[in-house]
Length: 172
Image 1 (cartoon, rainbow, N blue to C red):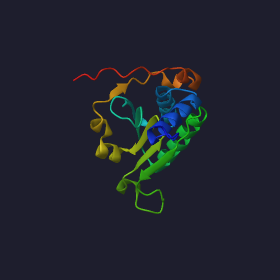
Image 2: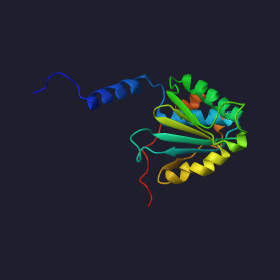
Image 3: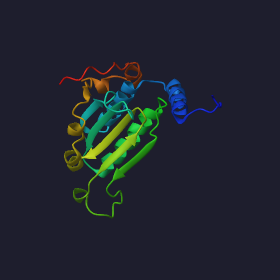
Image 4: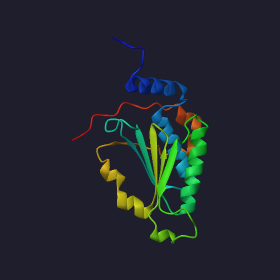
């Protein structure tokens, strides 16, 4: 007998559907807009992983490398501004290492900043941390999304109209 109450699973499903209706763009376009913003601030080694077939938490990872804490901060701010224009705010941000300039020098720190945008999780690393954590290896079964060569030439409006495709069958 139904008591009129919704289960946690049903509530989460309704919340997700409501959120999806509010989203202006799909998750692949979100990842590409974030990648463009990262390129504009000179991030290196950009990689977008399609983890939809491997994770029920997020659809895509954007992984990139920064050369300094100042660049990490600039990347976080610039990506946040670019995504907020599309109603895709950064929901949560956290990182490792010290953000205090008076602490140990940059070379002695491990720096990893994670930006949770729901369907896209952005990992900003310093070079040492990227090598240490090797997310590319951990998620090696994920499909790598081709980042257009002319990414910086595309407007955010053009990127927002790119629709994601279903993840291809994993090649074993």
